[in-house]
Amino acid sequence: MWYLGREESGIYLVEGSDCSMIISGGMSYITPDVLTQLKEFAIDETKIQKLLILHSHFDHVGLVPMFKKRLKDLTVYASHYAWETLQDIEEIHKINSFNTIEMQLLNVSFDLTRYDLLWGNDLDGITVSEGDSIDLGRFHIEILETPGHSKCSISAYIPQIKALFPSDSGGIPFKNSIITSGNWNYTEFQKSLRKLNSLDVDYLCADHYGYVTGPEAREFISETIQTSYQFCAMIKAVYRRAGSVEKTVKQMIKYTFGIHKEYFLSPDILQEVYSPMIRHIIFEMGI
Image (tube, rainbow, N blue to C red; front, side, top):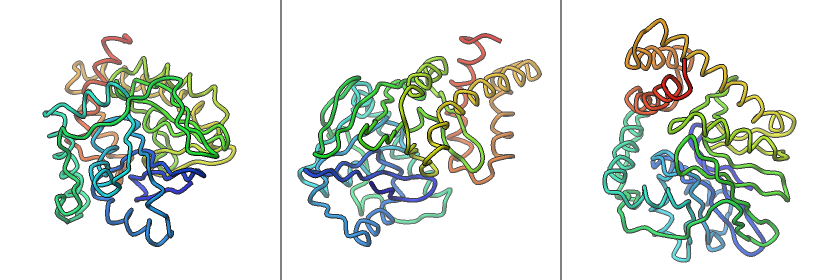
């Protein structure tokens, strides 16, 4: 099992006896890093026959078009709702534009068309859902539906090595903290965390800021659950003082970048993340 990319955005390569699978798609700008790593680690690209999209947000599908064109026998897997999103012209435009914004934010410069990184609505694949299993030989990947961060979120679990790939459904391990991001529906996000907490985990494989192993991995989801309740309490307290959703969003963005100066998202993108999440916490979960 390999972690490829950069600290703030990565993908995983799982090598089975029959074939290999890429799990998640990262952000577009990590492409040169990933291609260099594949070469330096002497990874046999001809064995990479499967790619699993854990959800359809721009920062988790950036490399998929490139891999689909580069690896002719590649089969792409995603949830039903992910495929709906990835066929929508407006959502495709957002994926491409947000990946460009992140490149500018991080001062990364190369032509996205050079690596066939631009999404179109012509990419398709296989739909997976709760209880499905993808066989790699030696390992099999179990699929769990874990909505909340997005409507389309799924997680992957390899029981043979107790490796969990929750994407952002499991919390983001940033420095000495955990960032909880129930963008679409925070209630469902917390339900999914409780579901993931029942698994036996030795490797917690996050998409942002790497992986967690050993005792820390076994406690990570439980700690994320606690952090999610603390985050809700903070949102409600800020809203009571601010008096509006808009002011609450602005204050939370300011707070986030005050304590997480090196976080990978731009303020504009974080606004898109926080607005529906905070609205749900205030009006659906109650203040």
